[in-house]
Image 1 (cartoon, rainbow, N blue to C red):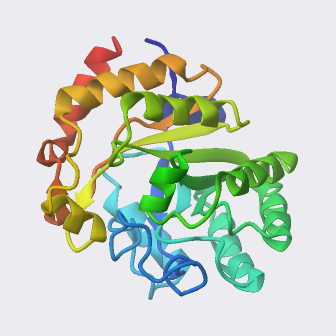
Image 2: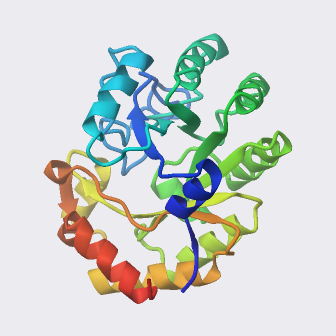
Length: 291
């Protein structure tokens, strides 16, 4: 089964292998500071999904250098993407965003920026800055949508409606920003049909890339409380492989598949335990897709 992988896209774009460095700019999230909510999304860890990111107390340049050392054995090209990962990375005054993003984009080894954020944190001043940065080096904006279904969105405490996502994609594409969307597979109460509806909708919304993420239940989250109370079950191994195969089948070949699974920190994982064996999961996915 053919799909356009991120690895192939990066090789086509930059001529060789490129590695993402996870940067922590020290931002928070409107779903935590009281603007939208205070408890965050129900699945989100205390680290804002950035457990593998660098120390936010260091400068952006220092974080890049540290991250380069961590992956020095995996890559020889010397080309990297600065990935602003934890929490919401456009949720700060634009002057602060400008300072941090330019420090990263001006680094000689950084070939692009990848910025994880929420669709409701893209004001006109932020969009203008992203457009400006995109003229220096490529910029990817990663939007955490997770699902198109309002019942699920309310349960996970996403904090914005689907039309906010639609507007965000429209505005990003006006400025030519490469737009990537995160989807979680296995949200409580969602059927395979529901998940495929989300994938299909997102692929028709004008995006450039997609990330498919298995729902992880992490320790010390509100999702863990519901899981331990028996309110839902996580996906089984074979079930997830089947869902991934069906998702890939409907993703157009021009949309880059950035991820087909994901792995949280093993020390924080409550369920599904099988997901901790990332190599096994990736091998099973590749076999199912005939790769």
